Amino acid sequence: MADITGGFGVDSFYFSKHFTAVIHYEKDECLSAIAAHNFKQLKKSNITCVAKNGLNELAKNSYDLIYIDPSRRHADKGKVFRLIDCEPNIPKEINQLFTSTERLLIKTSPMLDITQGIKELKMVSQIHIVAVNNEVKELLWLLQKDNNEAIEINTINIDKQESQKFNYRLEDSCTPKFSLPEKYLYVPNAAIMKSGAFNLVSDRYSINKLHQNSHLYTSTNLKAFPGRRFLIKRVYNFNKKELKELKTIKKANISTRNFPESVANLRKKLKITDGGDCYLFFTTDLNNNKIVIDSTKA
Image (cartoon, helix red, strand yellow):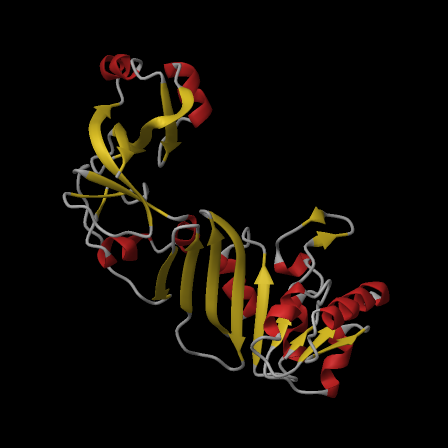
């Protein structure tokens, strides 16, 4: 396989554990030399460093896989995440790339819109959304030449306790069920939120959505779930009378979902400091009423 944006070679090092041979292309001669030295010290004899522009060298060989981690720095725009602003410009070069391989693996910014990425890259076979400690770190796009099959979406959230996975096909669809808050509340992890599989979560885990746009879920029985789970203590209506009762809470973790006010504004209004074991979710229910869910971790 070929890594055409080699850099210091971290990705090439790990690819070398799964491929017989890895070509590390890096146009910066100094950086290429550093990577070559490091590979030698690590006794990685199946990695070959080539101090040239990988795009210009690809036509000389064919590869099982070409890997690209495009630079997200633009001379004029600073830090970027759109594919056309990255270096190399993959949408522009994609036809050339597919003359040397049947498969491309591209790593992009977590900020890249998935719908836009599919439109620009074409021939996408799989999208891997990788989160660590509930923060999306990278998007990995596997492109297959002439692919016309349904796109697979694979999400993973890695933390100290476990790796939460949620996989589906982009064409999968379902009609979710809705209800008012029951005994338990569920918040999908960041990788699932990035994927946009909000209805599928409801169907897959037999839990009800609070509102089409809230992306919070509820059930009467506690379910295994790829995200955070909470025990609901009380539900307040967001009105003057019940907000007075909320002011008795002095410390809480506050989140807003499908709610017109910001967390900072709510903290100031209610005089609630951050932290503690109380979790307040300001959201909208299926009847379009603004509510506050008082909960603790389940």
